[in-house]
Image (cartoon, rainbow, N blue to C red; front, side, top):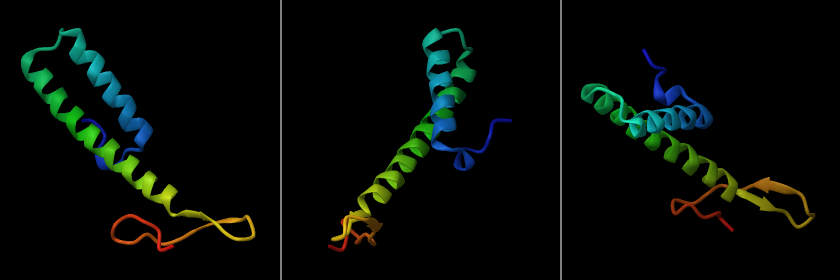
Length: 83
């Protein structure tokens, strides 16, 4: 049984997605196995997209203070910092 996708790190999910793509490109899978692999690959892609979105929001929240130090600032509903 494969690992639950929502518990996977971005790197682990991307690695598995790459393996699935290579397997599908090889064309050696049975049809049912290929369909299952494609479905898991689609779920892994959505998971990776979500993880990247989370990382982007965290980076956007990093601000430089007047003294040159960095900190974070809450994001608004639009994804912009409150500045």
